[in-house]
Length: 261
Ligand SMILES: [Zn+2]
Ligand SMILES: [Zn+2]
Image 1 (cartoon, rainbow, N blue to C red):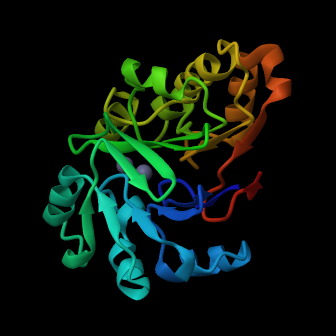
Image 2 (cartoon, protein in one colour; image 1 turned 45 degrees about the vertical axis):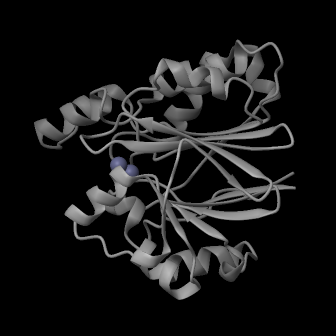
């Protein structure tokens, strides 16, 4: 059984829940503990059922409540050594005895996980490929570019969770400080709609197996993007293949559609 729900997505906080291969995993805890609990309750998922917490990187919108959640539910926290060190520098408080350093390949019961270092800021970030019985889920948010070597692994994802942060023109003409605009547009920033569309095109349209059933676009900027722009860009890239794939958006501050297959 597979279930997935984004509990919140965007610069005001990110958290998702994945159920696959008998494992229930929370990915990021960048909203308040209360919100995580409320949003899980909305989806009838008991937080005590979450066996592990994965943290992608040490930015507040991903790690903010990781310590609180882990302490309350005695959940082990999986993160790379790099993310842990960055968190320490940022004053992130995690329960030391519950920390597990992520390796390139992990096995949680029947769930296999491959981790990828993603270019994002100076601190880097982690992307995931979850796999159970041939069912594959790719999870990639907060990255300036998709490194070429990753395409091989995500080629036949059943479900892809992917950042589509900004519309380039809106980002360039936004009122944000120039250095933020430049950072967001750089190879160490965030994926634009156009970049996300090129990735989805390679994963979905150019993949002869047509295994991908759904794509959820995430971390959509409130100021420099709109769900309408994201969907239009993705559909244009997919052309006729768009009809066979569910194109979903992860909304800011609230739950996405709850996928259950
Ligand atoms: Zn973020
Ligand atoms: Zn980030």
